[in-house]
Image (tube, rainbow, N blue to C red; front, side):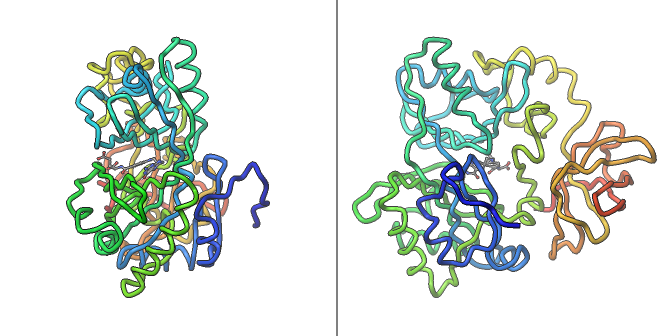
Length: 365
Ligand code: THG
């Protein structure tokens, strides 16, 4: 299956590097190209866990919120209490509508008291943020700046990043950022990324410096076996990292998505979904994200697969992949509370037949 290029499917500031590295498949994310495979899913997986990779995650677009009402607008968007968030911090923040339905699960980056980036997952959140700013007559500017995140992920990420940005990057704490120089440009470098292997995300401001940075990292990491990589479908399921639009949608609350730990709805005064969420937070959800183990030779998970107890649907699997390390198919599903206990035996209905599925104790991480 090929992806037809067009202006709507935006290239990124790193696409030239990704192509030179022999990208084999793309998906679309925020109307932009996101590489999904370089050598093979399992080869990329092994290499990510053993070495270091550069990821073109420019599709994690930034929504910049700037001005005197920036903090007020940010708190309207999320049930996470942002009052203790300082410049230099990143927060994983579920964002919800007035019904408590999830609109996105971005990383918020606080650049200054009156300036944030919202590093979004795959949904058109800009329109909601602009709508709120306009509707409430807030004194903020909301736009999508030319910022392209580049992730450095894997066990050798610290070593590689230190060679380009200096030893100071080693001291960056998890979900914090600092500003580091590259060829005379200041760059936001955060310890974060969509894998459990550790590493950084560089928020590259302006497209001109993107390929020079990509090439410098490739050059500096030759002896570390640095390669182009991308968010890996196996590793992220093992790690329980959720994918908006796949594992949860606007039909789910953050609690159903297992993101209750990132909500402090009681004190998140101003969040537009607060009243709706206070109701579900009190009772607890009746279905919730679970790790699921599946036996057998699975087809690609390109649709929600019903989870069955006999003739009765009790949930759905939304992501699945063969894990070489755990020697089983690892999966993420939404399961009703009557069946969500560990070791519950179910069946999963795929386009290629029915397979045994077992609710797992935890993610594999
Ligand atoms: N980095 C940045 N932007 C992003 C992503 C990213 N935007 C899109 C997408 N990924 C958003 N989704 C996630 C999902 C999980 C995490 C980050 C972004 C994540 N979660 C950890 C967890 O759930 O344990 C840590 C959260 C925490 O402790 O605060 O890292 O990857 N820039």
